Image (cartoon, rainbow over all chains, first blue to last red; front, top):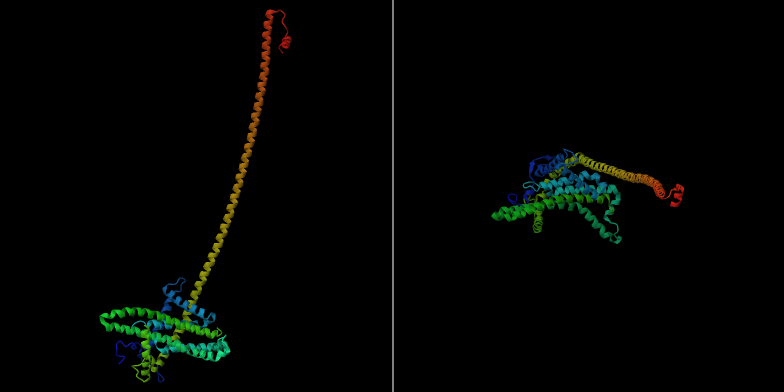
Length: 246
Length: 183
């Protein structure tokens, strides 16, 4: 019923199987979601394979683009974490490129937005949360627990502050994943709703069309911005794990 | 935009409820647990591949290229600095040589001026001497001429006196007597 509605804004998020694969009773079919993950991977690979095909001192456009993204993430990591963060650079860089391309490919009509599914963003956020917690305990031992009790807080406030800090720490993966997912979901739904208005209003459809163009530009900004926010928050969490005193 | 977002968020829980009730097509596809294993599986595969690609291929190469460029730029800057100092040295040397040359030429000018003046001075002196000797010579000549003229006049007078006297008296006085009277 809802799926039959041509302007159902949720329809675009539905997952359909392309190839049915079962492994030990678990459904791991290759779906449209998987296809667009592969597209994001392919887009990143294409950018860097072309960008790195001619390594020259004076870069051409594609090399410039790949170097820009490299420097952008490298600087972000250096600013947030410092030199200790160098080890995590491949992960942070991959994370940014993957989310960035998933968000952007999703902006093309009739495509699927991988990052609009909470399970995907939550998988990233959960992985980051667990990794950051492990890194925190490995690097600082039990001293990592200091992040729940910031220095300079009077002792009588501890019963209040410590639970708040623990809750805020535990809610990090949820806020991180929901932020990205909800942004993609809401933005794409609104685009779809306004696209539907254009069809419904007939000749008067130019008004929502103008609005759609503006909204599309905004969504483009959000697609880039959310990839950036996800990455920089990961860097900040990593910094907290490496330097719990700050 | 905000209103629409609110409207959407308000309707979202309804969708969640539908999903919980098992009405698959009506709920948010995001809440369909049956698709989770597939999504996670393919996410792990694609992201692992991307991670490997970044870690083994992109980052070493890009890092090397950027490092290389940085080195090249700093080398070029060093070279430029060296050339600059060299050029400054050359300029300094040039200035020194110029100063030396001008000093030398000044010396030459003063020396030649001096020499010229000296020469002029000697020439002047020589000329003066010559002129002086010429003057004294001429003076001597004039004096001699005067003496000579005096004697000639005296002789002529003597002769005249003798002639006049001889006409009136027979006794001609001697030359010594006339000379005595003339003086």
